[in-house]
Image (tube, rainbow, N blue to C red; front, side, top):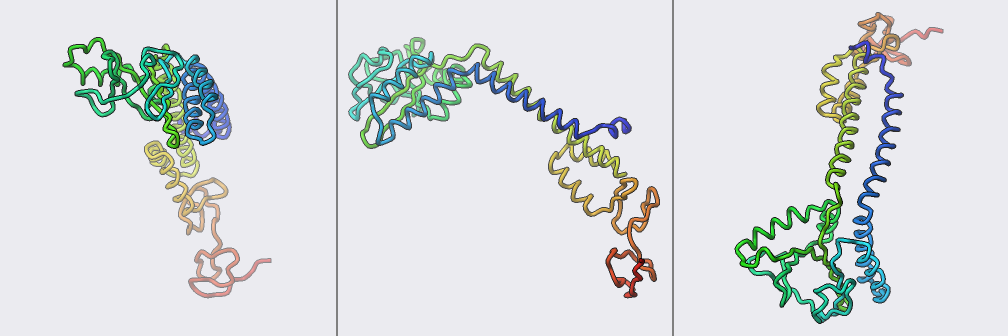
Length: 309
């Protein structure tokens, strides 16, 4: 096994690994981008509409056009409402049942957490107010149907009309200067096999990460083997600690002397290699202590060194 590991050319292995990882990464990005294209487009357009509304230079008519495009291109959108500062509806992208009333006034739902709201004269709908981050997570990962729906069901379980209630995801952006608000009413519809695609993608990414982890440990094992160090010890440390083990290994080797002939790592004060006998250090011509090549006097005995021509 050691002979096999010694023969591994890690420069080529690393090059192949990087090329394959890049190609697979690009392929996964393109695949996921294609699968979740509509969801990603909604999130992007939602963000842009919010920025335009908050801008003092916004044009409400242009925003209406962008809202219409966003609403028509996303099956998750039930309706997008624009309200004035009095909560009067001045625009509806899909003319849903929520736009039939002149106002869209939210009140906290009874026996529910502070995130849940209802509107007057509608016993069929409950709105869960979400932050932008929650909206992004629920839109892409589509866990709205399982987690949020279950939460709402638990809280309204004792209500007589429990089975007839529909939970909608509600998010909004507002202009602090004019008081205008845009409500996004969503009913998240998961992408077919979307969760499976995400799990497979994460599994592939984890595989490449673990492969990198193992290759790094094997590289340190090989290097320690060639340096006549304990390969099991250093390979095991790297396998457990990864980069931390590599840093410790490098520091340890820097404090050692490497034989230029056989590559063995050993005490830096050795005069001769303990594996092949090659002379590693210069010595004092009087007391035999290790000295540096350019030393004029021995640090131990103080005798002047003779320079060989």
